[in-house]
Length: 257
Image 1 (cartoon, one colour):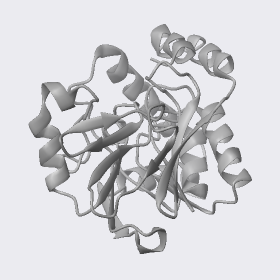
Image 2 (cartoon, helix red, strand yellow):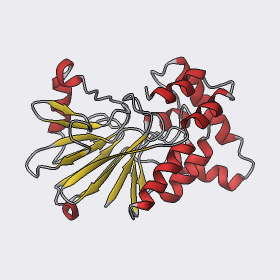
Image 3 (cartoon, helix red, strand yellow):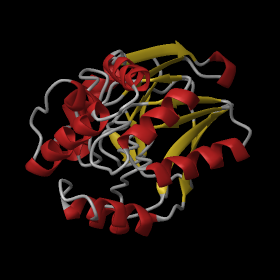
């Protein structure tokens, strides 16, 4: 089995709960689709955990913003990026500080691998979309409002592509169409002849009105969507205690939006 996580957003409680769930399933390989940092209250702790546990990690738009420059961010996201950068820079241990910077700066934007062990074709992993790996959103409503975006993404993959970025889990297929985990009863039975873009949701800031952390597990012939409860109130209070972080970034966690 292989666990795929994304969009941790400096939320240690959520990440710790998900890692415990992954361990409980006996899964040893973990893929992180990016946005380890941004928005949340504990960036350094989350970077350290991901460095220790993830088999490989990709560059998300918030990782990029913290390392380089925020682009097309709203004011709360931009402020959170600069605050996060300050946290990383304030590390008193030179070696640890440099290791975190080197890790984040060196993240790739895309990874591909064979899915043969699961009965799949080629697997692609990106943060945003197949055509713009870091910062293109593919929303569920795009199957109606921007179907060409979904079709173009599907045309660029061989079989399956795993994404995050929107924080909304589900499966995009040709037609185009979108299926939420609820509609699939939390298991997508993979058709070896049908392409799919699969959003694994967000560990640290879900936005599908379910405040539990979200991730996915690859199993032979299927992709399983998993939700994990964590102490949301604790994370919210940490956000509220940091003046540089918009209170909304904590409050939204309670509602999963």
